[in-house]
Length: 328
Ligand code: CDT
Image (tube, rainbow, N blue to C red; front, side, top):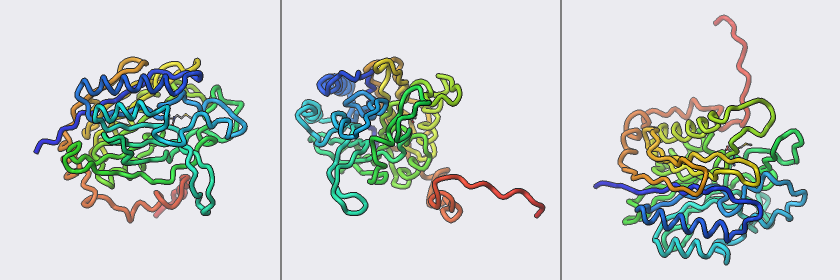
């Protein structure tokens, strides 16, 4: 049986600080309609798709930043998006900033903030939620930086692991779907966690500045794109899966975000890409049976992985210095 899924990367051009949810949602509905017209069954939007990339703006009091978060989905502002999803019978990855009132690790009920993505099914139901684990940036205002990147201030580390879900029989060819968010794509551990759950389609959104803002050395523009693509292509090859990797692109209040959204196959090849820094679709047909070759040969995990030798991977976060050489 041929298992072919048509997927769309729904790249978004910039959202300005002054843009309300209505601006984002109207553009997203238009992208959904175009994707549907081109035969897409699955549509992937960027990270924090409903607002500008607000972690570049410092708020001393976290509560002052609440305007950037959603405390319910759908909400009156996002209802048109959910209506379009139902009308067009699509499955959609949506990245957004989440406020959740839930117990923390000590069992204390409190207001918590996460950088979140969800998969929304064709009935408008949320079928999978992921909260970003690899949060880049810093907690406090950093005067040495050209632009702030305050994700560690505005979000807690995700507490849902890296979940994968299988579409029910008769839907989307029963594809196994998982999610990452932006910086997660640079970490092989993220991909392998999904690969260990037989993921076939990884959906991920990002907001990546087109220049390194840390002021610690020059990084050429083209290398930023290269590193993004290298990470996604390697993740797909080494875990025998497809990925739809989707940017927010262009100048947000003078701060440039790189575009270059890509769809990648399990051989690590780019199948489709965006070429501009505006709202733009890339669409590709994914033959899901392509996942089998890698999975049954070079990356047959059960046959070839050696967890007993991977002792450093879960024992600590930082690296350790090796012993100095000495004659054996
Ligand atoms: N949003 C996000 O995760 N962006 C990072 C850039 C980090 S620079 C501090 C990325 O990996 O693209």
